[in-house]
Image (cartoon, rainbow, N blue to C red):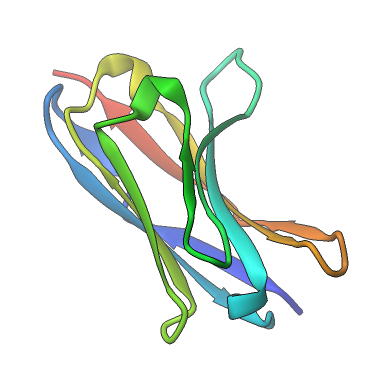
Length: 117
């Protein structure tokens, strides 16, 4: 059974930073693309950042230069360093795994990030 467990969310002031982590189990981690999505109240879920199996990365325009995604295949983990936070970054952040071989994707339960003074 595949599980993705996120951690690291919380309440932070504007301009602050957080480090989100997602640990995977039940999956051949090195064979999947990993990504972070977010969903704010009333909005659709959107891609924030992706790190592929070959470690190439993709970022949403709204987070370029502020967020950094990375992966550790040994730890089966993906990380999202989020900095210079703005109130509009407030959302539930979800970890996602996608297998190009099986065409299956998996989701974590989400971690809340709230940016407020």
